[in-house]
Length: 498
Ligand code: 4AD
Ligand code: MG
Image 1: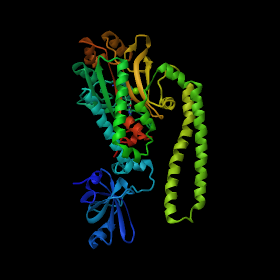
Image 2: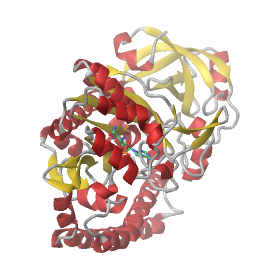
Image 3: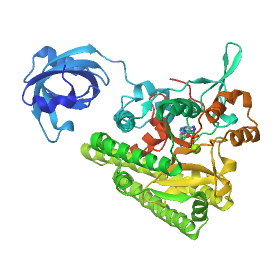
């Protein structure tokens, strides 16, 4: 079997492709079928003069998403998607599809989410999933090349890892169990056996927040390293992200183009050192005159853009009714673009006062919210690593900074362009007595952590690790505005199907 992304190896030869109709249009003597086969899209041209009557008739029956096999000659054509077309000689219908619910016209996002099982076939969704796959592969390559072991943590657990408020509870043969929030505690045990390990698995958080960054089920990559301190931990995170970006930029050029991703910041993130600032520093930046200026400038720019877009709409409106057919298609496309951009602009304008309020109310000691992270990252040209957070807002297992006991040796990596946190990590508390004290302070049941405390009893060592959220990473690299498009079947507040 030949796939569309291999057509360049078959120029001027006859091949058979198997796939689905992505789009089709016809004239008196020609039918154009945009065929997709999972690897790409190829324009297949059926010419009435060149095929027998049966093939011409069948080609005329095709509807969007009908399945079929097409044979023909591969012809180079630079204007065609993918650079090649198929001049059809034969065609076998597998099924004429029912009227397909997702048409090339605009659909609301709720409708698309209800039809996620079909939406996955659309170009942008297809491209995002391929980037996700490339990221996964790049992560494994990165760690495997460094001789980290990939080992799995359990999904049913008896205790909380990241605070008790977001636990999904379930019944485990009349015992209470929880879906894991993080594989970290188990990764720590495995690191004491193997030195350097990483888990790669689904994690669950009963997040009641309906935001563009929160899922209730997401995938996390959690490396854990014996004898690593916080600085080594940050170095590894930075190297890993650079390595993921290089791989994706070289392998997914076509996908990023389909997603219309401006890759400037991604390239900068590979080239530049990540910024490393302390939490206290970050708070100063947030409260500074510079931040206020950034928001003022953004308001002015968005206001102007809104006005320009509305003017353009008005101009286009005057043309309506009298335009030629080709011009109408052009106008429809442009109007669609304008409305999409207007939505974004209006959302920004709604957000700016929310961000301003968040910044003005922010006090040292608070954890950064999504808005604060967005504003911080807008001021940097590369990812930012914020380290040494107030221990109060962080998890029980984090080691305190010997230089200032109020601070935890924690670090978060924030992606630029407003994306915010993609990694959370820390050096771990390695003293038995201190860890016991922390468990007590956090009102956690010491019993459930007995095995975890053993790691500090039998050959405890300094160690560190972090968790990378896969969906947030996909969202940033693809330039998507919501994590719901970064996983085949998202689970989030109010969404359990399909
Ligand atoms: O910062 P978090 O909560 O850290 C941990 O779970 C640590 N145990 C990790 C470790 O040190 N081994 O989560 C890590 C990352 C976040 O930075 C974010 O990218 C992602 O997981 N994440 C979510 N992604 C989607 N939806 C959610 N509700 C998420 N919560 C966290
Ligand atoms: Mg975090």
